[in-house]
Figure 1: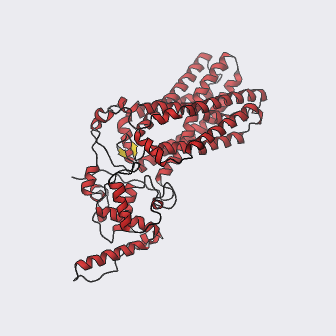
Figure 2: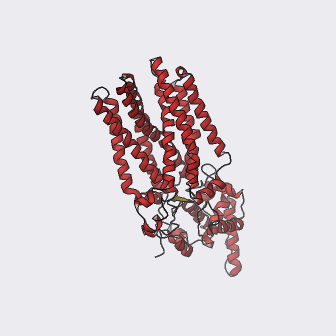
Figure 3: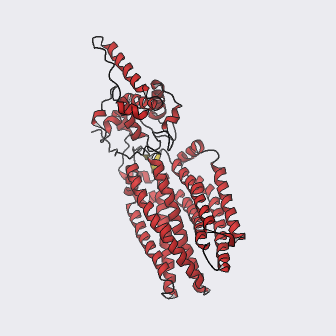
Length: 484
């Protein structure tokens, strides 16, 4: 049978499901990177604290650890499942592709995460309660487990950009899919910036220290850590760009704003200036200043960076074979995966999709706008908002054009042929392209729907002059009202 398992996907009408996923994920990156960076910082501070007999460093570990329990491990444990839920309903096949390729790697990451969570509790509550050797072993285990969680996740994120090796397509296999050039370049950037974030967030805790001498000493150490890690992270950026696949390079050249590189450099300079301030005037550091710097890095640094990484891999969502709209676009013999484009070419979305509404499988003038809306949700909403707000509002790409025939011609030319590099190839049948065009035109002018139905009815009458004129048929009133 010519059927494909395109699962129903969640569409958020306000800002689009893509932005919901992106917002949750970006906030989670702040928590997770702080946790990993702090774990390794704690290991170092525990070592020099015992080596130099400096109990104040162990006390700082306890204070920062207590803050971290709420900031990273409680809030992070909320946003983590939030990512799983939002991506599962927003991109079910995307998550399925990652699980089928890396289920044991993810299971391994969860084991290390459990060790990490237990470790931070032990670091906080066993200060001064166990001997030096035992505490240092706990600190080292905690730091290594935290780094292992990042290594596992970065490998999976890199696979979302492209498989580690081209041989993966023909042979499959965990190692061929996981370890690629982009994996290590991305790991280098994240490893550097996690210390930058740790230093910024650590300033919130340092600001509350009572001993001015110790506050000065620690604030300056964190400032040096922040400056060095920020500069090193940016130095890795050209390396990261060089590891992107050709498709991502095209997207970066055509879809990324020209001011992006300048903006990132500005954020870097502002970050360095902040750390220079805490280096020169450490006693002026307050929780408010450090908190503002944390939010600034989240909004101006992490969010644009994560957005660009997500955008660069379009039109794919995983492994350069699964489109963002859940359609399998390439054969992957190594994973016994077959392209679904031939099936869509043959019967179209309306007859290939298992979950397509039965009443919309046959397209008529009366249901065309609803078919078009269903097509837009199925094939477009993972990357485009269907409302005026949100991620890449789809109506804005047609400049208010309400000519159904012109929009249809564009859809066939740009999508059915796959000639638009950053858009998936969507082999629409002629009637599907027309239905989608009616819906897109109706976003600019809801009266288009009634006119389209009337024109189609009159055209049908001209073919059969014996048929009675019927102009009463129109699109559902609720849909027209919603468009208005």
